[in-house]
Length: 351
Image (cartoon, rainbow, N blue to C red; front, side):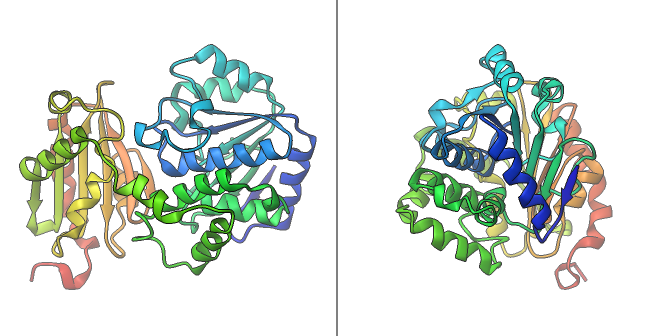
């Protein structure tokens, strides 16, 4: 097994090339509730491998948000929750499997047993901390990368395969880079991002048009639920420099909520200068509460999510879950706030 951390090693690229060269049927899997980086990296690789003449299929554990359906190739994705037998057939029939934007089987939920029983070698390309041991045969893990899409481009470039990246693949790759940095507004100071962005735009991608589709296009339903959440459900806890937004399942149903409608909501309170970290608690139909956190500067919501909510992520963007009621999740959050106060920047704390 080859395990790789930043910088990307020649040995990992050599193994990547060997496996791709020998594979004819390839499956690409990303994490459940796919975001722009997960779907974008999967579709970028899908288009690239298609251009190389490979038989390749993208499988997602569940549906992706409707506002990502415009990405080229999204209509060809096999969604396991809709067609479990088809997803199983794809994975068991593959002679190479890519695991993109996740680093442990738990992140693909009920698809995990199917993936782990598949005989094909697995290549992980991911930017989350602490990839699970003995999960993938080849691991390319660079937590310093702002997105898996950025990392994927670098892998393809080092492998000499970037010549197969056409306009569709480039658009999907840029979409993931954009969404995992809030349109390059956070975690985006690495000059490498803009070098890669420039190379991808040379494939004919209209970045401004893509940005409008991702960040400035909405439905009436989405506008109403976002407005309601900020006006009625945002609580500022000034002592801990924190904003908390909660939405119950009944409130979501009242607005006709669809997956992706509250994407970016957790970022909104960070525009308040006094708010250092923002928390969004959403009650799900599955009986648990989804926890999303964002923060400024060096305040690590990744540590909070990992230590108290069974999750993880990045310093300024992380998430987790609470298996209980919305009230339980809120009380759990309140209980840890005193422990988190010491993490606040010294000049932001109340004197």
